Every structure is written in structure tokens, then in C-alpha cells.
Image 1 (cartoon, rainbow, N blue to C red):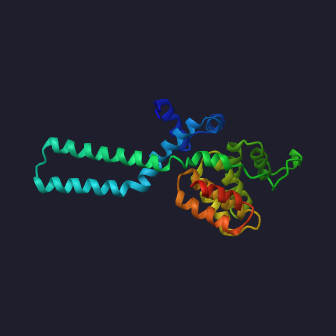
Image 2 (spheres, rainbow, N blue to C red; image 1 turned 30 degrees about the vertical axis):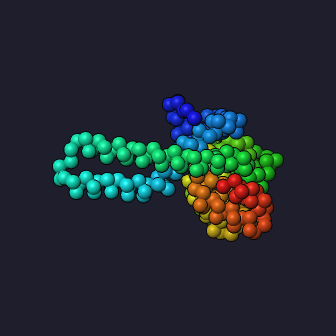
Image 3 (spheres, rainbow, N blue to C red; image 1 turned 60 degrees about the horizontal axis):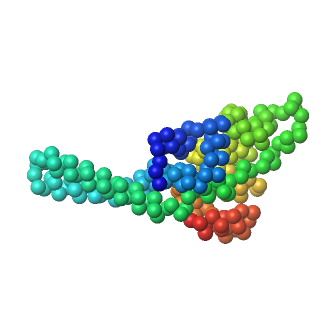
Length: 247
């Protein structure tokens, strides 16, 4: 499947978490509607993240073997041998790339994420409260409910500095970041929520943590979390089982 430079720049901007606002919304909508484009995003994600995580050791080993063989032949390496070494290295990288794509193409983590991700409802601050009675957290939650996640993040981050032990705030900050594809930030706060064992937010936090790992193509972590969710038979058990069947 071909991919032009404009697509590459656009996709990498999304994968690096640099896309925001309307541009991000339009990108996510395109992912839902265009299966071919979603496959392109998945392939690029695997190239950027998967190769280094899963195959860098093997590539380094091959390069070390090649370098050792050439050093034993001569202390002065001819130019054509140097070129040969890098040509072989490039070929190895290409083989690894296509192997990784073919192996994981059926998983399509981004499409799976989008198929199962729905922002958690605002159960903390009902929207019918009057505007003049709202504190910053409540205002942030209004932005969250309106899917204005950038503004929600700004207020929730400020609130987290003043009230670092507010677990509900941490939870919705994580969800806002996840909606903006700030996956690593979301993971950090979701782990905090889970660790506290919050009676109502710990279970959904675990579900969203699994989705965050899935989106990042970190399949080992995602499978572990979804298996745990499925075994508990809770609110997200059936959905977790469906995802596991597709991994």
C-alpha cells in the first residue's frame, strides 16, 4: 500500500501526540470512515514503535557479526566492504519492517482502539448546575462533557497541582489526554487511579489503561490488562474478551 509524504507527515504528527483541536477531530473521523487510511496509520505506528521495541536487539546482533567478520579480515576495511555492510544492514531493516507489518496487520490497534473507546461520562459534576456556582474542577468537567479536551486538560492540570490527591480529577485528566492522543500522560495518571483502588473509578481506569496500551501497540501490556478485566467478570468483561479475540 503506497503512502505519500504528506500522509506520512500527517500520520506522524498524530502518532507523536502533536495533533490537537479540530485537526485531531478530523483525523480521528477519517480513521473511523476510511479503512485504507487506518491501515496506513497502523503500519506507520508499527514502523515507529514496534521495530525498535521488538527487533532492535536482533538487528544489532547482525550488525555486530558483520563488523566482527570484517575486522578479522583486515584492520583496514576497503570502501566497498563498508558499503556492503550498510547495504546488508539496510536490507535487514527492510526485512524486519515488512515482517512486522505482515505479522501485525490484522491487529490494527488504532482501529480497535477507536472501535471500543468512548469517553467516560461525567459522573462527578452534573451539567445542570448553574454557571455561577461552579469551581474550576466543575468548569473543567463542562469542557470535558462538551469534548473540548484541550481546555479541560488546561484546567485539570492546574487543579492537579493544587489538589494532587483528587483521584476523580486525575481520572478525567487522563481521559482528556487520551482523547487528545496524549497516551503516555494518560497512562501515568490511570496507573495512579488504579493504585488507589477507588471504588467507582478504578475499574474504568483499568479498562482505559488497556486501551491506551493497545493504541500504542504495546500488545503484551494490553493483553495482560484485558485478561485481568475479563477474568473478573465486571462491567468491561465482555468488551475485553472481544478485544482479546482480535489480538
